Image (cartoon, rainbow, N blue to C red; front, side, top):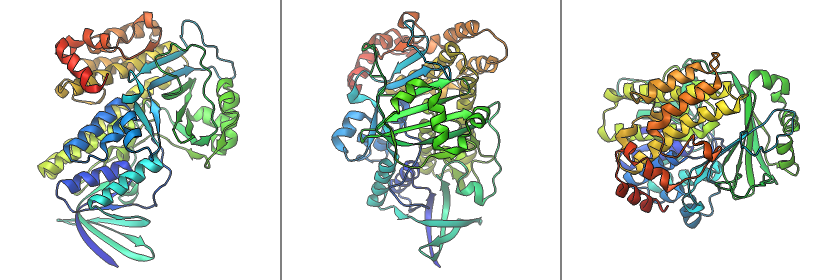
Amino acid sequence: MSSSCYDIAVVGSGFAGSLLAMIAHRLGRSVILLEKGKHPRFAIGESSTPLSNLLLDDLTIRYDLPRLQPLTKWGRWQRAHPEVGCGLKRGFTFYHHTLGEISANLPDRTRQLLVAASPHDDIADTHWYRAEFDHFFVQEARNLGVVYLDEVALHTVSESDDSIAVTGTRNGQGLNVRASFLVDATGPRGFLHRALGIRERPLPDFPATQALFSHFSGVGRLAQEDLTTPYPVDDAAVHHVFDAGWIWVLRFNNGITSAGAAVTDALAESLALQDGAPAWERLLDLIPALKKQFAAARLERPFTYVPRLSFRSGAIAGKRWALLPSAAGFVDPLLSTGFPLTLLGISRFAELLEADSFSASLHAYAHQTESELLAASRLIAALYKAMADFPLFVGLSLLYFAAVSFAETAHRLGKKELAGSFLLHDHPTFGPQCRSLLNRVGSGSGSKELIDQILRVIEPFNVAGLGDPARRNWYPVRADDLYRGASKLEATREEISQLLDRCGF
């Protein structure tokens, strides 16, 4: 049995595990990266956000990872790494459907919501084609000097006073890896969850949901009658929302489209979601617009069925181990919260490495990771309750877009202290007010009253013109909104102008 000892062992070589391994190596630690599979391989979780890209950009600069930096914007990604597949994400597109009925695009736009994240393609966000994106990160880690072993089957983990050890097999040979600290980046219900027998905890008030997803080729584009939209509606994270669930559609530049559904147990049972492809066809039959879009689609891989989508670990850190946020919990793909939560966790863990203060700070790391997971869960649970009431769904979505656009702008202005937590959940006024509003969804409160209160709560943080009735649910990125919101960010007009110049607006 081969045996080796390292400062840091990272289990799981998705982009998060590989990125953390690279950072630890840059900080002078000896690092081993362990992977049960072999790259390139399929992975879900594909749509980035402005905050995700800002966090990744910061990490590439702070820890001297220049080859990763172009992957934080569409334009420079295409110029630097066209061989790595991705999709153009100009914003968030939502359409509301009543299952079994033809959904018309009403003139008042009350069945759609378009929220732009960039004013043009060059600085747009992206969907990450994870087979190639993760493979690229692993190659970069190896090129830096991170020890990488794939096709590893890990069986046990044990802790001592001065180290943590994992045992397993690789290529028929025994494997024993000892490290001062171990990080689990294997995702929900991953390695440490199983090896340590960590109990699973429910997400409070979150519906039981199931998922079905795959990759397709030959998917058509949505019919777009109005060409004045803030961006082409397909060049986005597209959400098709209906009572008790939703469908995502993400287009990549290599001809592949990622699509899947997340639905509550009752709807999953009626669709027999576990049937895979037949269940997908049954769902498309209920949504004529999607049935038409997927008419010529070809399945590129078997469907993946997930009988329980949400997850929350009963423990996030121990004396010599920690779960990355992606392994500590998962809520739902709705609103693409997974990437920013994971990158925030990597950033915090990197700071622990720099300070070499694991024992003193792991509790704080675990507490913040769980707090942010619960903040995302509260919002998405409320959105599920409102899926049959699209005006309320839109209003609740504005809580998310107000919080993240304020945080993103504060970040770009160098004023991170104004938005110190994900979704501003720790903010002394926004946090409690938001929780109060979310708790009232489904309690019998009138939708109109709740929407009006949402608009009042977001106003001190609204730097994107959200809720303006004249825009009728279409929200382009406009410099004028930032100038009007400068005082909310404790910024001057000149600071906003400089920000826009730096961003390539």
